[in-house]
Image 1 (cartoon, rainbow over the protein chains, first blue to last red):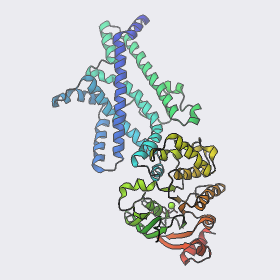
Image 2 (image 1 turned 135 degrees about the horizontal axis):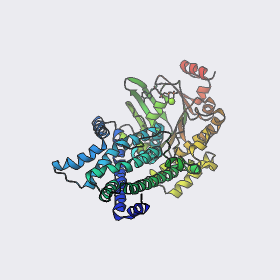
Image 3 (image 1 turned 180 degrees about the horizontal axis):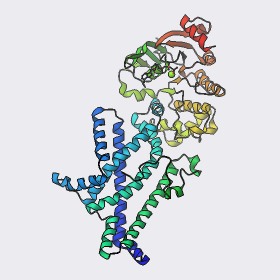
Image 4 (image 1 turned 180 degrees about the vertical axis):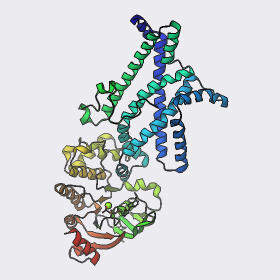
Amino acid sequence: MSFELVYQYLVSQSFISGAWMTLSITVVSLFFGVIVGLIIALLQGLKFAPVNWLTLIYLWLFRGTPVLFQIIFIYNVLPTFGIRLSAFLSAVIALSLNEGAYMAEIIRSGLQAVRKGQRTAGLALGMTRGKVMRYIVLPQAARIVLPPMGNQTIGMLKTSALVSVIAVEELLLVANQTASADFRYFEALTAAGIYYLALTSVFMVGQYLMERSLEPKKRRGAAPRSLMSRLAGKANPKPVAEEGP
Amino acid sequence: MKEPKLIEAIGVDKQFGDTKVLRNCSLAVDVGETVVLIGPSGSGKSTFLRCLNLLEPPTGGDVFFEGRNITSDLRHADRIRRDIGMVFQNFELFQHLTAAENIMLAPMRVLGLCTADAHDLALDLLKKVHIPERSDHYPDELSGGQQQRVAIARALAMRPKMMLYDEPTSALDPEMIREVLDVMAELSADGMTSICVTHEMGFARRAADRIIFMEDGAIIENANAADFFGGLVNERTQRFLDQILH
Ligand SMILES: Nc1ncnc2c1ncn2[C@@H]1O[C@H](COP(=O)(O)OP(=O)(O)OP(=O)(O)O)[C@@H](O)[C@H]1O
Ligand SMILES: [Mg+2]
């Protein structure tokens, strides 16, 4: 194998924009996935039967079919109903909706983990339900959901490779195209692998810093889970979908 | 002219499904009065308190606060609750906030105080409950007695017109009960109107103007403190007292 070629691939325009595309898809889908998840989780808390049924159907559809199917479906089937979307947009919509179904579950269990008495105490102070949710429940739930959400982030980065099937020029597609043009599979895929590892490492460090900053000040000395054990992929106390959806 | 009572419950009923938890409960409390509420477990004491600040809407009867019927329109219940502080058996301090931040939250988010004013208020109130040095500690770094005093300070931060205490010392170790009861007695002596569910008869003797006895969701006894401690109580109340005093 030629290290020189690997390096050239790494700094080539097509690989850089492929990595950028992978990063954009991941970040944008994650952002909307969290929003969808939060909305679903809050709707489920309403205890209004028709709304609960709708959210259940949503979860059933998106958790019961492969994400690859959802990507292809949105890209290929929606145009027959006159909805024409770019490949990037289709990818982001599919991944966001899929991620939302998983985030909803994580956020819902985070909200439920906040003791009921905490809400009652907020209400008793004259706060409205909205303020109790925003200033008392969500901040406490955020700490609980951060570790599983971090895992979802890493999972999303890896899942984003699937959108190569609808010809979004992300990292894996670029590597594959380059490799088959030059017949240098080893070098091209090594370059892609290096980008993936670099991106997941950056996310893990980010997750680690965020978990630390959400801990109350006094505990900032002691790390929640050591960075080394994260990078080595050592199991969480409670592993949640390491591979993503 | 007769002044209206600060809070008055008239014929309050509460039903959860088919179970009647409160039956026709009436109670009027004057400004500055301290009322102690006693009764066996499950008699509806907590539910009654929660009906007074509309955490549980009564299923029958009315509650008047400063002469206004507050049960007729529950949409503004949050507005009423600003004026009625509540303290819980399990403290329920906000776990993600320090003692000072617990106290500052509602004044800032509900009344719109700025951070500096809210912080001054918090430090004042922590002095009032005798723990000025704990302002930057998180709830799990405080003893039970300290947590409950922070919880009292948190309720006082809204400048309530009255306080409701639901068994404020029953989750505490004996050596901490005193420090919490002292704070409550001081507040009562300063004229804070209070309704307190407690079986600490020492506190009742020291601070109460009136004692209420509840059983099976009904108010059986409503006696002024002098009569009550003079032994002028009905026979069911006496039986209950014999139980808790032995
Ligand atoms: N949300 C609820 N749903 C159904 N039943 C309830 C509910 N809250 C209270 N109850 C019932 O109402 C009755 C009175 O409860 P409450 O908590 O008011 O009693 P209490 O006098 O405060 O008792 P304790 O001394 O144990 O605190 C109990 O039988 C209880 O099971
Ligand atoms: Mg109770």
